Image 1 (cartoon, rainbow, N blue to C red):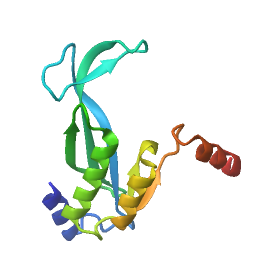
Image 2: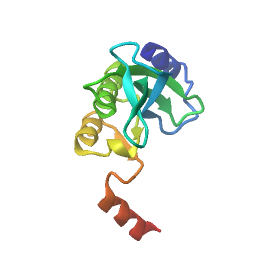
Image 3: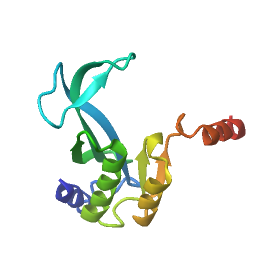
Image 4: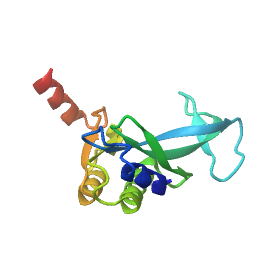
Length: 147
């Protein structure tokens, strides 16, 4: 899929866009009542009881253009995390698309940690991350200074 995205850029599919970004985020899919394979992860209710299973995946897409293109996805199972997979996907995306393909990466606030920010910086990308409760001091400071 990365070859298709590179070809789209060569064919000027993104020429109307000043900035090209990559978006990384995780989701769940394929829910069932019981574990069907070793990749299944438990789904818990508010009481922390297991009420089903599903698969978790992280996807990277080209964004910031008129044409949004998902181009890589990686599932993860027990013992792995969305955060680690996101870092792997970011490095793989830059490796396959080239260091100058994108200008920035958009990620959920959970990714706003030093290892991910360093990985993005080493890849030559700026980071746009939504502030959430996982960084309470920074979140509070932003609200006080900008609202």
